[in-house]
Length: 228
Image (cartoon, rainbow, N blue to C red; front, side):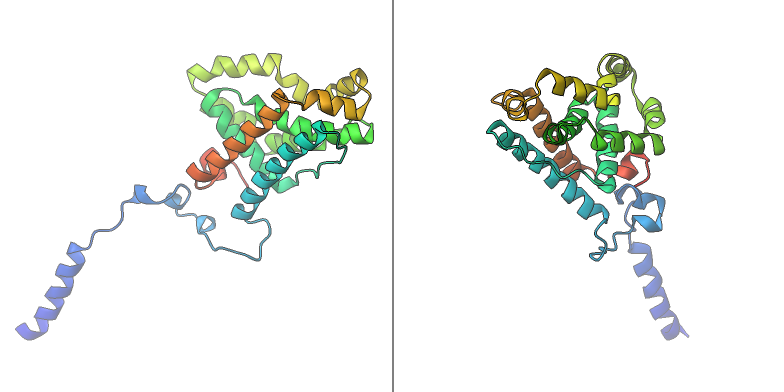
């Protein structure tokens, strides 16, 4: 009888000595047991989280390069961000704003993308900023920001919303005003994107933010509790 029990006892001892990984060790999202949080590495999906993340960063980097070319006289258009990329930017902006109260450089980057194309077309339009606000509203990010803002960031956010944000909300009027002041596309680009351009610095700051999120945040949508 004892010889049958010994293997069973050995198995029980081994199981008792096995230590399960701590629940908190799991990345955000996966802690909740969400089946969608499993990384299936779907290489056939062109809009998987990783590919959209990489694509968005590359496109903002391309915007930075285009501003340099514009300052040198180029009048080529910028390829607009698609819906997936704008959704990723919106969630990143929300994360940044919760942390600091306001991140106007992200909105400024989208404005410059729209301004470049508007100047080339000689017609004010802002599909990038409008697309951003559409996703901001549809995902209830304004409400989420209100819930998550700390006391120290609340006053900064309120001040930004009253004084600066309207120019990004009323983006067509903003762009129209800029074009009316400087009708010449090449002159506008040279003056606006020359050395020490604050607009160029905003784009470069956006790149740094997106790369930091890529490095530090496993999934920006889980982090901000928004939908991808």
